[in-house]
Image (tube, rainbow, N blue to C red; front, side, top):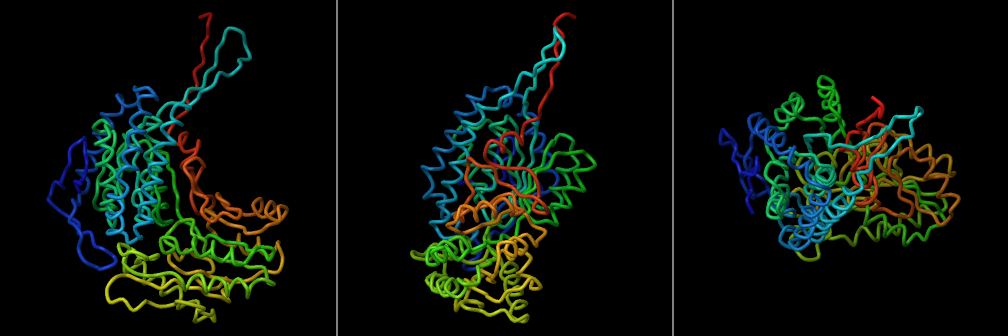
Length: 477
């Protein structure tokens, strides 16, 4: 693998020679030094994408499909090689990392076919002698800015849709996890992607972002990350009237009704909650359990949580690796301390494990959680399950919706009427009914309220990168 920036088909260092030290969060040891650029690299990458755009958008959807298919095949064939790269830089266990690379392949497969279905339409005219057409065309150069928690998948979810639509790309991954992004472009180049169509840069976040915002050749910015940065992008995009797609995280509620099998509910909850140590935008966080079943659920969840094995993700049998950074672990500790101070009870976990190095934190279950606690309303983004109770469906919906976030929500019940009332009442862009891992390549992903706007994946994820052009033809001119 070549761990460098890719600009106009060339592997590049920073023009001033600066590098960034990537560290393994399980050992706190350096892994690699990668280029760390700024405005010059961003401008070069935008110019390369702009120059490559006409050729790429002039290709037929079938030609682009063939290349995306080859990328998907290569990702699947090399998943075992790619997985350790991800584990070493972001900490997730090998099985999770391999699964992420497989999900990347699914996205390229899906959009390879969906690009053939970028349909326009003929509109019946109100006057004779006219023909009215709506034609989808590529938006142009797209800049993507992505987070560290899914260092390949977040890129693939944006890039596959944009490439299928005929757009060219400038991508900036998180500086915490650039190696997975660099590995992804290695595979894409080897699969035959033309030079300049995808450009990968790594460097100073603020400088690179401002350069993207100020360059008129960038027609859209797609971002996954924090609300704070999303607000900066919205303000910056106003000057150039740039299109935005924003996925800004969430605080996902789970409504567990007493008609569930609590053993099953606990098992599914633990698998979903502690996946990637809770460092997942749609991670279920705030559990509300119908009062008659609360104690049974808590007992079962505690048993399941204590089966998890914390350690280096490269080791066999480990289910939970480290947090990605010291700052992330410190935030979790603050959330738990705040909850305990306000009389939440720790059923299991609640501290660092006895591991000398690394940013580890034990999978934790809290109960007696109230809305005045930080974890009761904000995004913890870590391995902490917060559990409280409800007495009625209306109360459950009120508690679930009592958040500025609106990305994902969940309900667990065997009753169709209850499920329907809940999924219709939840104010979230994604709802899982007895399904704690609802994201998939063929369905739209995105939030409402302060969780952002725009959709990725699914049919909607293609049209995010297409502009509708209206053509009116007068036949008798």
